[in-house]
Amino acid sequence: DRHLLGIESLSPAAITEILDLADSYVDFNRQPARHADALAGATQINMFFEASTRTQASFELAGKRLGADVMNMAMQASSLKKGETLIDTATTLNAMGPDLLVVRHPHSGAVNLLAEKVTCAVLNAGDGRHEHPTQALLDALTIRRAKGRLHRLSVAICGDIAHSRVARSNILLLNRMESRIRLIAPPTLLPAGIEAFGVEVFEDMEEGLRDVDVVMMLRLQKERMDGGFVPSEREYYHRYGLDHDKLAFAKSDAIVMHPGPMNRGVEIDGTLADDINRSVIREQVEMGVAVRMAAMHLLARNWRAATAEATA
Ligand code: CP
Image (cartoon, rainbow, N blue to C red):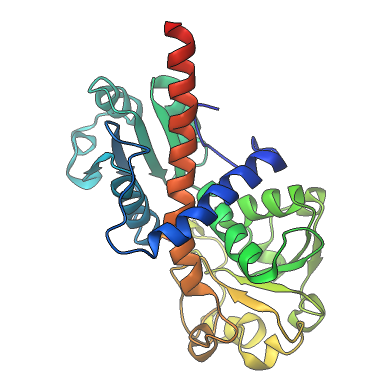
């Protein structure tokens, strides 16, 4: 494929190929003076229309470690402020000849639309409630390294499922890799018809966490609640906040994940988040660089093969 827009379009073999290459980049990233040339001569532009710490920083590091020239567009200071549209902004940058556009946007579907208008490769760094494919891939790599496999695992995804692109991409990926998914949330934070995605739904943490291998916590995404129902943080923490007591309902070796940014004392207890015997939250961040290196490397391989074929 030319782009990476979502997990939806990835086969199990394609997912495994990305994870295998990313695994090799984990070791590479732990070396001093790590520098490779898979993206030498390529230009990468990062366009983040929404706040980010982990995704933007790791895409930038990933590009630089593979030898790309990386430019971060300051979208807040761009001509969007003067009324230029998303598509005009993207086609303007495309005319400067980048090879990779990494795009985050608050509206679902905006990154797919943009990808139709440009000639370079586009990577979705999170669009609205739709998809966050590199997050699901880094989560999968973290799980695979901790548990040795992705199939026949029981994974609980807990919290604000309704507003979460992370949940959606993870459900697609884990289903495709033959894990079982349990969603745990109050009904107000579950999208209608979610059972059609082949998941089990629970309202209660004790029931939902029973015997799971992986517990993935999600942030309450108040910025996407559009004036709708916003739960009280105190009550929410009492019922759905993960601490060591609630984690005891899961398997004794269950790992705890969170895509970040976390709200300590809302969806997760700070002591548990920092407990290196149970929490793999820091590993997730490390895997993020490796997965983004692998994703961009494989897209570059595809466009180089297409160029070679066109010129043969
Ligand atoms: N997980 C994630 O997307 O984090 P950022 O918003 O900090 O990029």
